[in-house]
Image 1 (cartoon, rainbow, N blue to C red):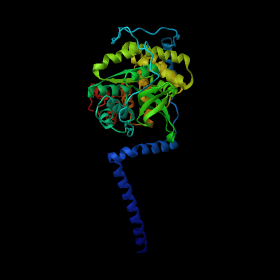
Image 2 (image 1 turned 90 degrees about the vertical axis):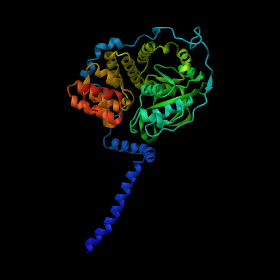
Image 3 (image 1 turned 60 degrees about the vertical axis):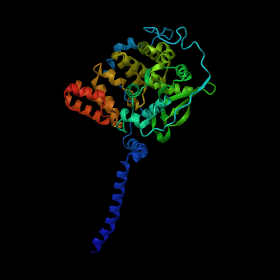
Length: 422
């Protein structure tokens, strides 16, 4: 009787505790609570994971035998002399004044556009939030919930690619958008001065909670030469956030100096004139390759790693996969942040299309071991498995890609090609 009484005294508090945590679990599933707390849970999970299974701070380097496959392409990617003239556009660039060039008129020393209403990002919502602010500048009515519903239907998805943002504008609004690479601070200033705030993607180190290097979008709505700052509508830091010129360049290099311009269709000719020769996409592709080659020649350390990666990215754009694979090898040897493939997938393209399927699988495994909500990594691992004669394993990975991003077009297309159900 006494033993039963003791069990009863302990059973009730235990039941209360179980019910308390069960209620917490149910509450956490509510969207409004999940959005506010999920990023904190992510931080705690990352800290625990790093404590139990510490990961290296850089991506792995290629196996010597695999890297040797690309050495024959060294001459194709060797840096050219900085005095080499840039390629010429394939056709004249139309504009309102054919006698002027983007550099003919001096830029104002300070421009501040009226910014759109600011919006802090929800969990992992940098891209959708930044795009929503960009669209609101042009009178669009909506929020990051609208953009995210299409760009990343699963909230835990860790990244939105620049091309996906451009496609969203073209398919879901009455505006247009262009994506270009190898931009310069003057390119950004010229667009801002003309009333076209650009979006850039850059890397930065998150000091808070020691999260390390991450990719991040910024909408730039102003600049001030006297203070050497751009003014960003930053979904993480806040409105009118100053970004030092040198800081921007250092972070921007990690993403091949890409920029997105959104504009009303009736103002397309203005934008093309502002871009100058880079309005021609073929020209811009070649210009980006040359720009990266020059940076490879001039830089060292972490900057050199990003320069090699930029060269690989630019070569993938023109489907020159052999030289691209060599460039990515050199970037990995120089030391890339371990989150690099969360945001850019050029190495998957280069290695896959040069038959280096095990490299694709190895990089995908390395990336997915740290973060599973990356549909691109699931997709490319699946593609490599299929190429190695494992269609079932490949199809399973493609279906997982769809679970992370419902409707992900490449995974759907490949499953259809295989005759497998999604």
